[in-house]
Image (cartoon, rainbow, N blue to C red; front, top):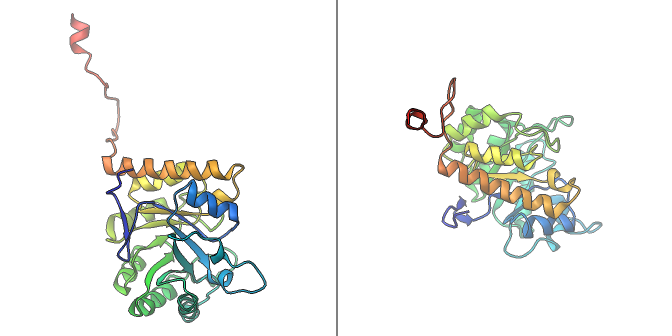
Length: 257
């Protein structure tokens, strides 16, 4: 990938367009994400960094990796704001991923509360990256609220079902002047590649790697797929014919000789 093609969020530059999500954690997963997938940003649930009974995930994330604490567990804007402030006090920095879910069955984000939390935290100097159901009006509200990126779900968290919301994500890519980071549900490298070909700025994944038979190999596959999709987008995808076919080489001269 062209080293000049950088992902810029909150004034910070990233060469990698793969972000590790926070659903399933292990030392092997973090190592593979950084070493084999090239991740420069890792999401973590604040409860994992604020415990004495369990391992502190901060102890396992390498230096130089940007921490993206999320507000997992928040049920409204007020709870999300409190979690974000706590993350900053714990030394996680100013980046924050807003996750607000009242729905325990499908874990779908509450878009309205997400906009409220984004506005409050952006005014406090946070680099806010909100997780949302892909809706154009909500995305526009998030831009106005001060979001640094928009993170629409591809399909339900942990489902590995791929780009179920493909057409709605494409609308956001076309209409929103912020990085669109496809989050949740990407289960295969080919799905990550497709999202990048559409013009997504980055991919967040966790379950697809964590549940793979060969974790390092899957991490490498995601890295290559994301890079291939990005390069294809930058190159400009070839046209699609409405009907019929077109010869790759003209045959006229050859047939008449």
